[in-house]
Image (cartoon, rainbow, N blue to C red):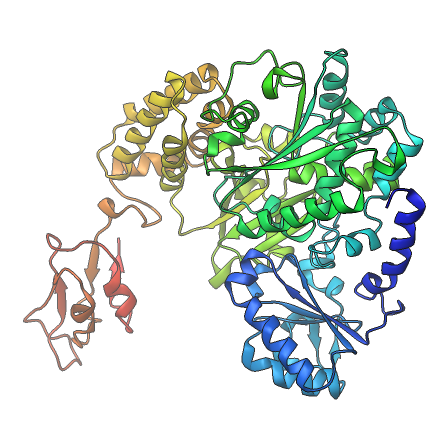
Length: 632
């Protein structure tokens, strides 16, 4: 495809096929499209076997010319995988098993009657089947970065083009100047989705203008998300890799770069494979390489695999790693826009930031700024996990409240438990307590309450979570991931972890809490890079909102949530124990013995726990059917 007209010809050819998946009025050579999630979550649950069984059954029933199987990226509702959606009906099959396939093909594809017991229960309303957009999980979402995930085959460039792919690049190269592109991104208010929220257009403008006579410039993509529980960027790469290639090429044109690098963690094998396929296809189609769209602009992209170091999410450490050196941060200034990769002007954005760029170019600034809040425009993708019914990937307009995300989209807390806190921003973020349940989620609001947006991990916690233990968990992660270059981070975070460990073992003092807080501010002020500067955030936010739990651990020597093992005490209520002995059989430490006491109305002597032998594993509580064992 050397011209924009050739690109549009491919788009027109494919448009009917991909449109069938979003509109029942679209035309297609197939009667049905069966979309099966091929993201990491569903693949781990067996979606590959589902696809194989489906292909075999369709062929054996003579339906190969009528039914197309499409392996897509993530649909979002990961809790229900493997997922299969059948269009044009839009029927949503959840937790699909190989044994279900024959019946679905016979009754639905041939008979025309969806198998209701295999459908997502929220889509079934008596005899009617509701559209996905009417379910609680999807109706409050607005997909921009995720618009193609779960819709197209990510390994087919023509399907991406059928959804207006690479048209933004064509528009930029044929109708816009470099300054036009940068001004558009500036006017859109798009802020970096990787954590800091720096204005994307400003970053591009600096890279273009600071060193105007630079002989080489670079465009980098941070696909090395390392936050525990975060999988937003991975899902975009698995479901829509071409959007990142297109956006990076647009960025290359805007700043005058000719080379791009995607730094992706090697632990994302599906994302890496689909990126490799996408880059090869883009080169063959003329979307990467020399004289793109017949212009004098040339640009190419290569992959660099990260080894899983969390610090390489920091921009200067990432660039150092691409250069082939140990991934350690560099002092700033100079900033990458002036001296970045190989000491040349460089821009670095993360996957989600790039995923917004083509839509802003195609739909305009007013469209993008109509979403979100005054200072945080557009949408944000969150990986929703923890104590939540609907774990998965969600994209909502900036300013959506935490309550909407957790109670409506997330389906609330399992087992009737109460919401306690939500952790945003991973090890760099903080905990949002129940008192801020109605806070609109945007960059400034989260910072104001001691948290941060981060890349988009959102971990939900209930009343059974100990907030001191949560802070300790994130500090342990940071200690392991610190590169060790600067003393405040290398030594300071270790000292913080030791104090937290002391407190959770019931050996802490009130002076330790004061010392912990003092260390937090010292490390924030003096660390070299963002990893160290934000490492104290989980501790500071839990101290601010849950200080009473710290005091309980220190003064009362109790863990209110019953999590910290050294502060736990297991006890059998003798009058409730029927003496069945099942708890003793399950105890790995042989810490449970029979007593001489027989409770009124019982036939066997009650059991008792030897606290000196007890390892506090909880196996006894899990095995007792009569709730005769309590945890204090």
